Length: 174
Image (cartoon, rainbow, N blue to C red):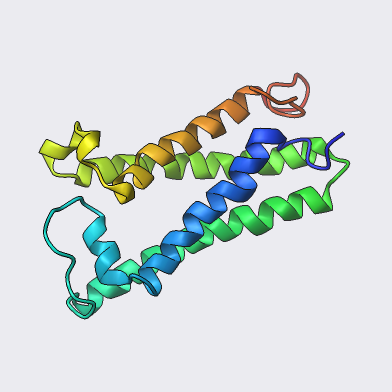
């Protein structure tokens, strides 16, 4: 049996490695390099030049830095909490799955709202034109769809054995 039966194979790769890296990296980009002005400019694809580093008002810089902190928090939760579940409960796949399921539920709800708000904030002519999106927009919408799809597949038990969700007599059904 795997040391992390509730998060095997693809799921382990996606949620212990890829997702944390993909959420921690934006915090570094917003805080240090290329910085808040670049990050702010990239949120909505635009052909205009990237503004100078000191061009944002202090409130906007604070909001971008706080957004970076939220990205960091998501990455750290995946990195530390999921590993703590694996390490503290190696022989208890039911407990692993219950804790992961609670985390995945919260993350899935955040995925949905993140995608919706990102999509609604795009200029109308850009919403239905993914070819016009930049890497930031694809990260906020396309990649989040991939993450959400993986979470939903995990809940459905695709590619893994279920220990709690979908099991009769365990208190939950999926």
